[in-house]
Image (cartoon, rainbow, N blue to C red; front, side):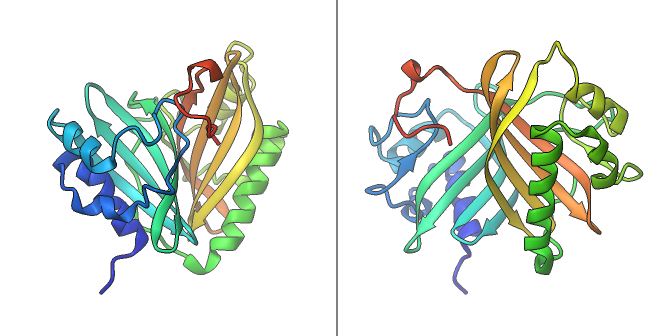
Length: 251
């Protein structure tokens, strides 16, 4: 049986740890567009890069992975010189990955409710509800996080069973409201760039400000019976454009 694209991406990311050059064939390096501003484009082949990285004894854990049409998105944990949590997004064309985005944050926690940034549900369910869940989460992000309508929180999130994995929060929705209105944080979601979904999992990619810094927000939601029941995220400050190592942009 042929591998799915998400299984091929799992193998690709794991090869950072193993140095195995085989999985790199999933990437069309001649067309590959890199959106990590801190990564040079085309300066080193992926097989050579991963082989070099493998010699530093890294650890790569692909916690959950999903497929949405031409896109694969994965929730990952890396242990290089420090432990980081990331979301990786790949776009496929003609059977190969040709574009990549990511959002990386230093691992923190556990949070106030005892949850880590990566534990929780991993198995996809309700694939027949993918588009319904995509539209639902898109509306939540636009209404609550961008427009600031906090009254919508109670109707969109199941407060009785909600599990929060963000390191500075808890399962308590009152805590979420405080977080979103904390003037000291200056949290400002401004633009929704992308919504990716498979079944009951939906990933949103947003741009905004945090503490006056240009920031990327990746939020993963799990939906059950029409309400949000679990949430993970990574938050990454975007370096000034003068420091970028490629010109493709973060988003």
